[in-house]
Image (cartoon, helix red, strand yellow):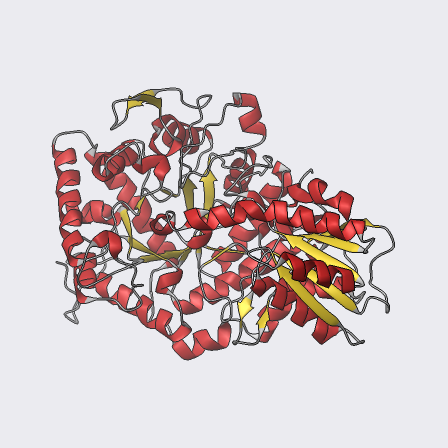
Length: 598
């Protein structure tokens, strides 16, 4: 250990000064999403909100380079600050200490881990894309600046954002509104603005998902997508934003995609089932080294997408996945193993032993490991040279402060897009009795409360929730109404929205309910049309669904967002619903423009 004059452990500045096991530890980023002191690992669903001693000890023992936080880890502002401070303290107890990457997925919109009632979560990338024609990169930059400022105040120093996938597949189940646009140049410009804004707030930006996840119809959390396009098309669309941003403002990190790209690398391997298959990008040296490092000249840190995702874990054991990742030239293995109980800690010990053995046997190149560790250390020196303890008081004053909430509100309004209006909007004085048809009760309450609070006239509002409603009551409510406002959100909820792979199985019953909702919505819209009721349809997420429902409506709006804040038992709000109410009532004009073709 290197000791300073004060007797404290001194952080080393070059990878060559670190022993091999410390270099390898720097290349791991662990998740402690759940942790239970007893019981079975698979059954553990207790969020890790304070750092247990065994986890602090393994961070120090193995010189772990980073951690990723999920919603279960970050329920409260003061608690988050204590957790990140404790994590950094744990890293400083290593024999050869380095500051810790503390990362999170805080993209905004659909993917925002921190409590929406406390943090500014915004309405997401596609809503930003809807403002581009009028505002350029203004909202991309301002939103990233706010998110970065809030993360920094919490002690979170890496944001896995922005998503610069070009969403040009209407059936994409995992990206859709997480993408700015289907236009590669617009995606590139907004992505570059966000990288610069995040890093100006001293939060490392991680572009994702290289070489592109926009044109897939499979979620890599649950399967392995395949992109069959030729090289020219990939260069012009999927790779274009990455190349533009690397040239303009190279991000601190780039995240891989668990996707097969035969045009970029058609080499094969034998998976753990004994099947021959094309390598996914995460494990491809041709993609992660030859293309990204040599052709695109990216010299920063690369990190895998979560290695527990089915796109990797279905085909590799955890140890072989990490070894193959490092052989491909990727710097950091994200979520290589799940540590849920004290018994799981020995799995990390075994992984570290296997990695050391792989270097000793020549399977992993010792020089490349040192070069990779140096990239990691250099990035930490750039952004984390002095990771001072964070203050809960400052964080509380920063998160969701009035100026941040004002920007959140402004973006939500600027994004609202009007696709059709046969004289229905803004609604008139005669539309006093409104029946809502919404995906669930929370969204009913959010729009209802927004309309009631903003309307100058008294309104009577009823609602049918698509998660379950009484058909007879719905028929009566439609008959008694002056106006129908129906809304839908597609596609179905993905694994990334609920925070990761641990809860994918829990979605099965939810999917069955969701599959019935479009049929129920169409039936109610047809009923309203037969009753000659004026109807507004709102697309709350990906706008590709609009052609299905637009024939049954006199007006159509798109918000690209639907998330709500549960302020109290009786108060539910959300920036998208407030923005929609303002447009419906004529208080604001819908000035957004579709960022994708429908």
